Image 1 (spheres, rainbow, N blue to C red):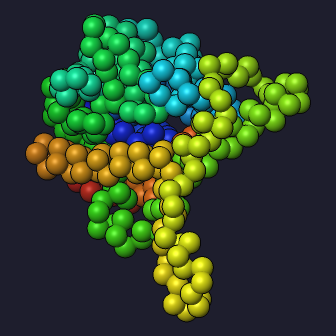
Image 2 (image 1 turned 90 degrees about the horizontal axis):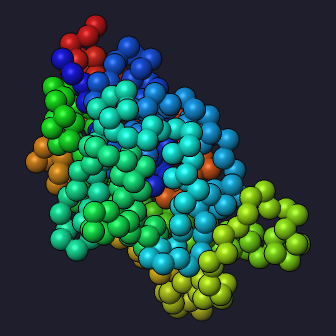
Length: 336
């Protein structure tokens, strides 16, 4: 019996995949086949290369400043971050060059921007496939591959269960990072979700402020070179400012009559929030049409999509999500 593991999209929340894999291995479960979408493809490539421990050690060491430097924040052609250093790290330290060299069969999923078709990578360059799969619209630039422009696979297939089955899996364990972004969950905690979305624009604001401080100080405080293709700071910071808030209308009302309103969204918050909703809905649809045998859903409501520096917490959440359903997993796999 071959066991497949489908790792879903979710930006920084994807570090939870590491904890999921660790917990499954501790239960004695051997994964034979791996598929991944977006950050799931990044982690999946490292796992299929036998280099997950090295990846875990690296991500747990990342500070917020290091994430700024790795992402290459600024106005780039096609996106707000370049991500070049992130993918260079994958190529140099955590993944083999080609699919054919991997220890396990692996597939990555991307989306053809102009046709809307799902594009599956099972051969050739691993890093190019992961780049395409991770190209979150608006954040990372689209990737040109075989004369087609690719964006994040989460647009069409956030949790690629079908790819595990295509590669020969008899049992598929799927990891959905969007469980907390279902409509019914969001309605019950709109303020919390609004505050969580605000973390993304706050991340970019802090990154620009750090870069400005570094240039004023002459560079002594910066651990790595900052990329120079950043357009005027005022323009960049402008897209991070919130829209006119209904909260302003409450200022003259007595405290007991003021209406609690979620934080006003900036352009980037509106974009990333919409992507979360899109991903959650597409995920539910795809999983209903092709359900996995086992579904793991970490609870990640409190993590922003750019909080890659909170890896230790995310890994622990991933481990906990497996522990919660350990008995179900054993039953499904026929183990004691």
